[in-house]
Length: 426
Image (tube, rainbow, N blue to C red; front, side):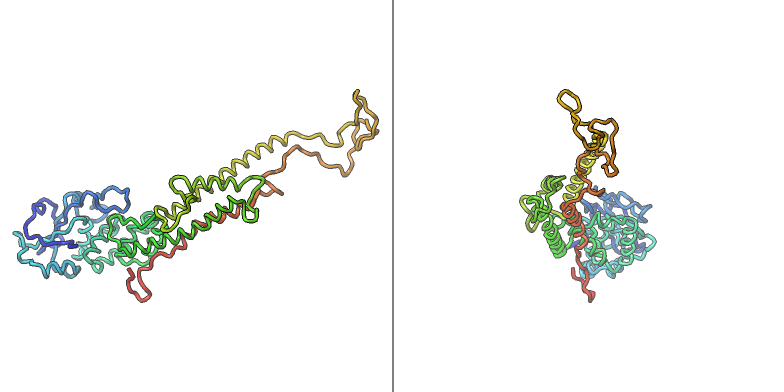
């Protein structure tokens, strides 16, 4: 696809768009059309890009250029030195026939390039370092990467890209985890190996299929390898998850999981099935199989977390109810054995029989032997406590294994951008 063409006929647009001067003695005019109705967005829910603020970002371009496009007076020599694409167009094209009435060659870009991002790169190419912003937001950086990628301008902006990326990661530490897809493209264009590995790792954990490129020209090889890591991660996570469900369903291979006092196994199984099967997840029945369409590792971990949190709330509610019951029953004291009176006859009189602990079978003063037991209270068996410790059963081991599933995401390797010899792999 040709991303730039020589305008052999003056376009009415050229007189309407704002004019920006990168070279006072320019012999070429770069025409950037307005962005189409659906520009690139770093996230699906983001609104269209509204332009770079000239005061905060350091750009000299007005905010309205995105809707109206932009004309930039440039030096053809700078473009030729910076870009092979521009070199081929200017050196091998019929530039003499393409000169307009203003004496300049008009170069018209294809649609889809952000005028503000183009102006930033053009300033860098022409040596206007003071006009190049020190910081840019993620969407502007994405548009810069697109222009740099299409016109092979890495050498001209690499030093600025290092600063943009480091400043953005410093000001927003969660930017890569929140938006890994644009970072996959940005890090690939600007040869940021560590960022590329991190972004592809997160994309594998968060995507529910081959990654949505959001309109970015991400290479098919990258998309395929990210999805391969996603499928491998899901296969690892689903195996222990279904083993836990089967163990809880059958009561354990050695009947060790069944909890006969609290029924924790039933409670945990019910909450897990509810969270894993509901909400469109369908992670239990039927069992997902490769290529795990519409299933992401992050969604799986979220379902497990919801089930465990519901299980914990159920356990806490049950323990609280038991504590209240025990508190009420402790107030009722059973009469000690040594306070019991002598046996009586049907008419209510003592029969004179001997009673252990009572003098002559009918004395009014009890005898308390040294070895007599303490008063016994009518408290039920301490369910949930044993020897002062909280109730624990084999279900705790299953809970711990399920909690550890989230850690599998950290074991994803991500893609390596360069080989040990420095060759670019993607």
